[in-house]
Structure formats: structure tokens, C-alpha cells
Length: 469
Image (cartoon, rainbow, N blue to C red; front, side, top):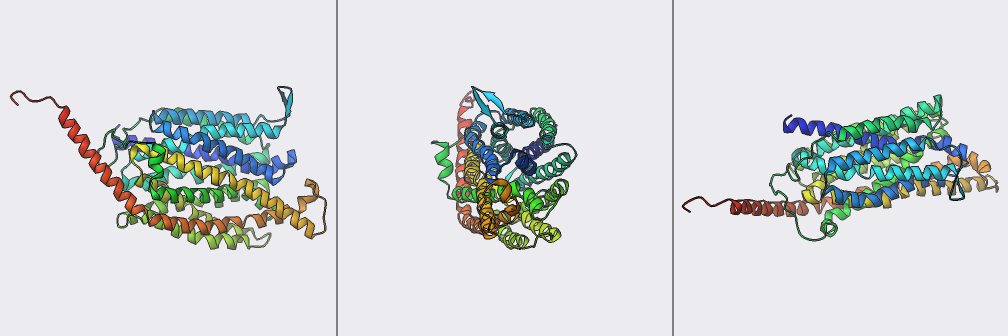
């Protein structure tokens, strides 16, 4: 197998791994409504399940990202896939309270613990995979390769929503976790078959194993563009995880859709709509970057600007207008996916090969601690607040879950307006990043040129002298 075939095989495996990553992650949103009704939960409690997952994901992601810069990345990835698939399967056996150390643990807290295990496993995916792609593909093809990898996000979400909705309606919500575990274990085996590339192998300047001295974390944070990208990640993930957690509940409450139909609708607008966004975003980003070094981030800023009015208009559609809502929000979310193709490749553009795992881990730490962990719970809190406000406006003072149920559709509807507001702020942040990225790219290329020169000089000096010299 030649280098091109190896890269293609590796990218196919990484795509499959990422697809299962988001398939498993999204199940919590797909089962939110039947789980909430069975256990008598509030929207805040539902949101906290997503927060528990993302906080541990972020905390373990930093050391795992650093490990990806030092150890065999394919083995790290395979181990992570195995762990998260195992805990996904265990999520399905949560039935009754259990007694542990003399205390009764409710099914909700058992699910809470299982989602923590999924978070630990999934924390390996982004740092190891993005670092591998950076060494498999040159900069001129990197955005497209990352777009293919990130196709796992919308396709995984789409399959998760469609299959989970069908399983819930035909069997029960717990069956969704059992079905998800099996392909994940197969992906773990496939990851072991990927050949580990040399670090920096795809760069113009062959720098070998050379790297800058100093704390890897401080080196990454010394790059101005990284601060803008980290902030952008927090804002974007807040929105994507808020939508992921509450889109199906919104379709069921506000628009009156069934479990199966809401799953299929979410498959289309939150999942499949991202496919053209990723592919087109990657191609445009690569093309513009050949003429403008800040082209990727400009494309991202324009895309997010376009998405904002679409999201506002979708939420403005009245109850029952499912077609109008789905068309508008599908277009808005589809354009939001351009973010991944442009920003992930921009990180590779400003970070040296030996620090890419660390950079992605820091980026993901902020992305999940400040974004994904807050998105579901903040939206849930806002939904509960507006639900109580709607109940009070109708003269209902009883705050029990049963009494508030008729007002939950209106409460969640009001809470979701957080998403387009933060989307507008995200566009501004990406525009600011586009103003610093050119200098940071030039600085990296200068360093790599000097490092390559030093590597060649060291190689020459190590050669044995010829007889007679």
C-alpha cells in the first residue's frame, strides 16, 4: 500500500470513528423526552446530563491531547473508542435504583455516571485524529481532509436521530444504547489497523523531530489567533449542543411531532444539512487560502453571519408550521457547519506539528467547558424559567412538574433565542481572528524553515568524514 492509499484508508477509518463519536454523543438528546417523562425530570436535569459528559470530556482531553503529541496516536484512539462504546452499552441497563455503599443510587444518577465514562473515551478522538490528519495531508489539502473527517459529525447525528427515533417508537428508549455499542467496538478494531505517520511528514519544511523549547501549553497560548479560535469554539459549541439537546424536545412539544417523525426531521436539519456545509466550506476555504492566508476564517465569519437571520426566522414560525421551521433552521444549521472545515484547518495552519495534539486539546477544553457544558444546562435553566413565567402569566401558581407541563413548549421556544444571539457574536470573533492569522502563519513558516535548515545541518555534521578529508 503506497502513501496515498494509506492516507485514504486512515481517513476512512477516522471518519467512521468520528461518526460513532457523534452518534453515541447525540443519543442523550434523542431519548430526552421519554427519559424525562419516565423519571419526572426538569429541563435543567436533562441539560445537566450533557454538562456532565462535556465537563469530563474537556478535563481528560487536555492530558490526552498532550499524550497524542508523545505516544502512538492510533492506539490512543482505539482505546478511547473501546471505552466510550462500552459505557454507551452500559447506559442501556439503567433500570432501577441500586444500593452502593449503603446509599440508593437512582437511575438518573446511574445514567449520569455512564455518560461520564462516555466522555472520557470520546476525549481521545479530536486530538489524536486531527494530529494524524495534519501528518497525513499537506496544508493545501488539509481543509478538505478535515471536512471528510468532520462529515462524521452530521452523518453520525443524522443516523443517531433517525435510528434512535425508530427504536424508541418500536421498542424502548434503552434499546438505542445497545444498538450504538456494536459498531463502535468494530471501529476500535479498525483504528488499530491504521499506520502511525511520522510527525511533520506532510509539511513543506522537513523539520524531523525538532520542536521549540518551553511549556507546550504556553507556546500554544502565545499565538494570538489561538485565543480568538478558542473563544469561537466556546460560542459555537454552546449553540450546537443547545440545539442537539433540545431540538427533538422542541419539535415534539411546540410542533406536536411524534418520536419517529421528530427523529427523522432532526436527522435532516441537524445532521444531513451539515454535509454540504462541511464539503463546500472545506473546498472554498482551501481555494481562498491560496490567494489570501486568512481566507479560511473569512469564509467562516461570512457563513456564521448568514446563519443568524435564518435561525431567528425559524423560531418565529408559529406552532404547527413544521415545514417553514425545518427549512429555515436546516439552512441555518447547514451554514453553521462551515465553521468546522475552516476553523479546524486554521488551527493546523498556525501550530507546529509537535504541538497539534496539545493545541486541539486546549481548544477543545475551552470549547466544551465554556461552550458545550453550558449550552444544554443554560438552555434548560432558561427553558424552566420561561416555563414558570408562562404559567404565572396564565394564573397558575403550582410549580410541580405536572402543573408546568402545558407551558413547557412556550418556555423552550423562548429559551432557544439564545442561539442566534450568540451566533452573531461568533461571527464577530471569527472576523477578529482573520486579522491575526496571517502574521501567525508567517511566523510558523519562518520557524519551520529555520528548523529544517538546522535539521539538515545536524544531519550533515553526523555523517562520517570521507577518507582523505
